Image (cartoon, rainbow, N blue to C red; front, side, top):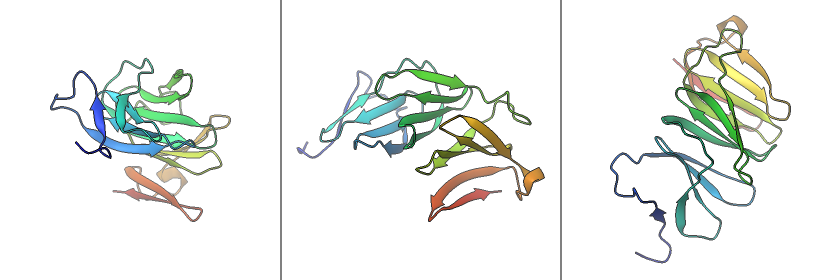
Length: 168
């Protein structure tokens, strides 16, 4: 193994179910990697060891990970239990089931993206786009009733101030 390689430090490193799916970087240059069944792993800036980021969440089937620059928090979506927002310094978290929102039941979050100003977009399967202002956590859901071609949205990206997303 070369000095530039990354080593996974876990007692279960030979387990075949490990599925790294997406990653995000915080303001300090640390990399956080979402593993589908275990949650978050992280790579500290300047280090070559990928370590489990234990923040106490006991869940499984995580669908997406996002770092919000405005609040410096990690957003981790669970396929069954909604959204977790995590403070990476204290590792404290809050769970949002998302089922309290109008027209929204517990749903699979396909993607999370946002900008530097705290506009965070959750693309929820067959429910539409949920925009949340991360500074005050005020949500607004957009559906076909608001002009979307379909509520079956999957992936999003902000580029040059424009929000792009895919739908079925």
